[in-house]
Length: 127
Image (cartoon, rainbow, N blue to C red):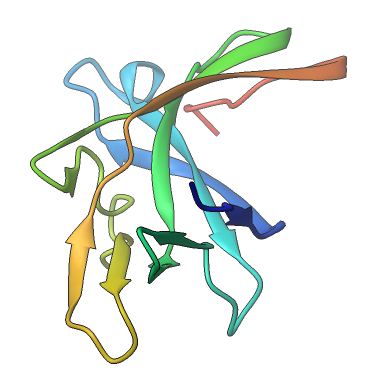
């Protein structure tokens, strides 16, 4: 059994990754989680093989509602994240390296996590 080292998020960027057909109020919005510059997203070992996860990941977030609680959803299929960029932005994905000097490949994250804050917050897709 290995130890997962999840590094502190350096930046959480909010943006739109899917313009809605009914206008900005229906845009899909998300949070982009990324590590400090030059750091890995996560490091761990599996059966003695070091694994390094680099890059960042976009998760879908609730929009246009003030709340102290929100569910952040990360979805992928066959190692490809559902959202790979914000509208007008560059590709924003996770990359995984197995072993020292091993090949670097796209990887995906499937996760639903609850976020809580002391005060109500909102991701507004209109402004």
